[in-house]
Length: 284
Image (cartoon, rainbow, N blue to C red; front, side, top):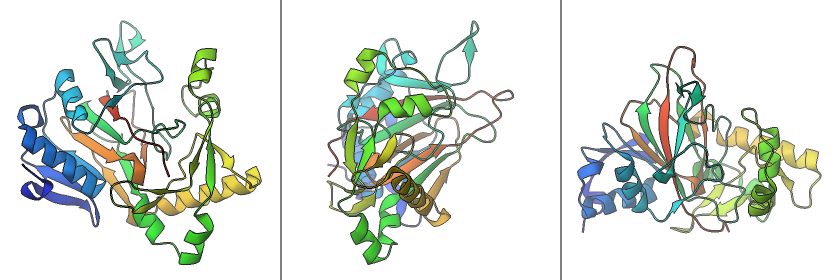
């Protein structure tokens, strides 16, 4: 069976991520796809350029990592492929076909769920000539770089995450949740330092947007600490910046990273991405 060691790869940045070379995902054998998944687990993020993926091929590829996760908001999912969520500023007949400026601000996906998603996958259908980068922070490296005493202080802390808070305070596209959405997305508490189930490595896991505080700590003190930790995690030495090309597939591990999108000139350019998630497990 193919493994990650049989693939041609190069690092995205020292110690983190891998670009996989010369693999056609749409036509890849099961053995090659298994090697791609192995590479993801080893490196925390993978990029494959020059892909041509229809929705069925994207869902098939995502399924190699596990069970695709559904989306809390359904209006921009593809009708025949609800696993795929469209990110775009394109208008058709005066109506948006996707969510615009989604994911701006350092965070990890679905942190407001009891079982946040394991990985996020983006496929570039159309990209601007400039802007709209995706930045990924290696929070294992950020944790390892901290003094031992600081790590010991953070171990055992529990962070309060709230989807209701997130949707009512987000910078773009605020919305009032329906009673059913609130019922389906109750507040949760997750460890501030997360253990990766694959190999036991530790990662800072502060996120932003969804967080309301830290258990047993005054809110102002807690939010200041979380802001400081995000600032630490997102220093240049820990961050990979992805410059998009049409046909790129980017997959990152939400268990050991933070990410953010960046803005672009949405009056001049069109951006269209297809996003998929794969189910994860309860952080510990």
